[in-house]
Amino acid sequence: DQQVKQNSPSLSVQEGRISILNCDYTNSMFDYFLWYKKYPAEGPTFLISISSIKDKNEDGRFTVFLNKSAKHLSLHIVPSQPGDSAVYFCAASANTDKLIFGTGTRLQVFP
Amino acid sequence: GAGVSQSPRYKVAKRGQDVALRCDPISGHVSLFWYQQALGQGPEFLTYFQNEAQLDKSGLPSDRFFAERPEGSVSTLKIQRTQQEDSAVYLCASSLVGGSTYEQYFGPGTRLTVT
Image (tube, rainbow over all chains, first blue to last red; front, side, top):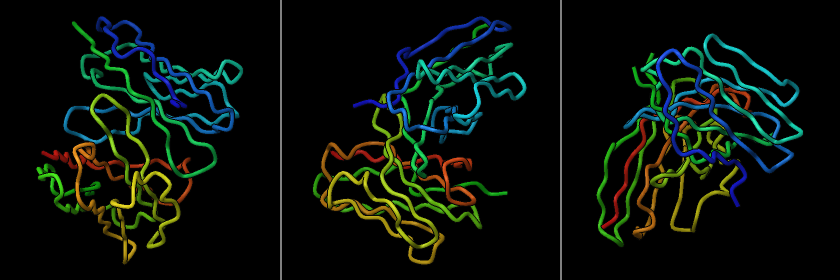
């Protein structure tokens, strides 16, 4: 049972445009959500997070939106840069220490 | 400063062999996590330590998997009698304190291939 789902395995965006990565979850007990970025042969790197008491969190070019009623969150990257090309994982936790990850979305930003 | 390090980076084991994977967390980090990442999947939680105490081992897939952190710093994940389904990348992460709202810093992982 996949509690965190990333239904788009890949996304291709032109440099300078907006990248939107989506994530859906099923467990209503999740209260904290994170996005991680992963380059090949490296471990995931924390990008941005959001608590369930908020609906938006912004950090530079990265913004995460949370829609609790739809059990959906999204990561917006604007403007997209070639260095953003990586696999992005959505993760969630339910007042515990362990993270539940989605299967990832591979983002490719082309010139 | 130094990040989370893991060794070996790559390990090939014959089915039935025992393996030991090492994780050196960031100095001073209280919490340490092990995750297993199969090809094309996201990381899956295995176990969690706070200092030397193993607080959650609910993700360990079988009793062939064992993890320890005897002095609250370095951790070892041991897999006995390896099977082909154990082939995966094993990721270690550490965080300054407990609680998921604190960022987990990941190591590069150990890629285990069981032949």
